[in-house]
Image 1 (tube, rainbow, N blue to C red):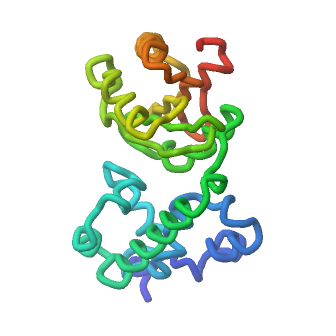
Image 2: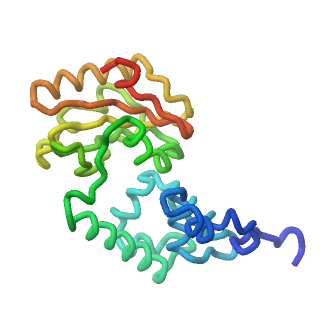
Length: 231
């Protein structure tokens, strides 16, 4: 094989960097979203390893949410996926959904900003556009869901209280956590972030739904409005 034809496969990687070996040694929570998806995919294609294929899939505008929302045929049309890999992805996601529905106590509880940030960090820190999301919580601060409100530049016209609280009302959420990412990697709140947070907190008080925090995701770091005393 010539130098130009060489490609790095997972088998060529050092053992301590291979997803399955890392999962066995450190547990599934230690793996990135791309590594977990690579394990589900099992193999890559001629030009890409399974990890590279996973990264490409996760670069879709909707990120990880794309895998849930995409139709089966839509997944099959992705280069390198096909029928078998699409079936593996959909089956894995369905098992996750069924597990989430078994018992309310199995849903993660959020006690501090670090737990909320960790829940979304691996997915949101790689997004190339700002995604504004709402984490819905019950009376015990257990996660009811994570809803995407807008994708694009964050401003008052795109993030409307009606959209932020719509699903919270429908699902009888007791409280919410606002979350969005900064593609620049710097999670420092901007004046616009502060303005929107104040506006949404006022709306939440009128509706009886408390905003516990607003978390900004950067490059593997986060900023919490609660920790900064801004809420």
